Image (cartoon, rainbow, N blue to C red):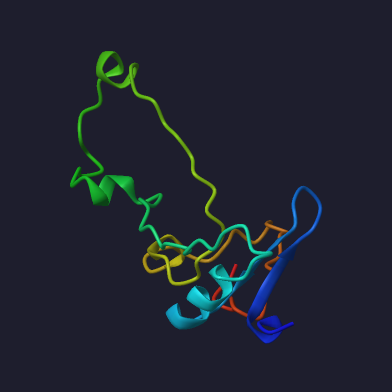
Amino acid sequence: VLFRSAIVHSYHRSFNAFAAKLSKDEAEVLSGMEEVVGVYENKYHKLHTTRSWDFIGLPQTAKRSLKTESNIIVALFDTGITPQSESFRDEGIGPPPAKWKGSCGHFSNFSGCNK
C-alpha cells in the first residue's frame, strides 16, 4: 500500500511481483521490509539495431562471403519496447507500401509509430 502509486505493472500469473518507479531511498525502504524477497534495479542496456550495416561500418556494396557468414550465431533478446531506441527511428525509410494493411497501437508511453 505504501508504494501503490509508484507501481507501473503487477505480475500475478507465474509469480507475485511488481515493477515500480522508485527513488533509491524508496527502494531501500522497500527492500528492508520483512515480506519483500528482493528489489532489483531495472538497468537499461543499449542494444544493436536492425541498422547493423551502419553500426559495423560496412557499406551496402560490401562483398559477402558465404564461407565466412556460415558460422555466425545470432541471438535475440526481447527486452520490451523502448521508444527512445534508435531502432524506432525512421529517418531515411520511406512510407509503408500502399497495399500494407497493418496498424500501430499507440500506448501511453509510446506514440512515435507512424506506420
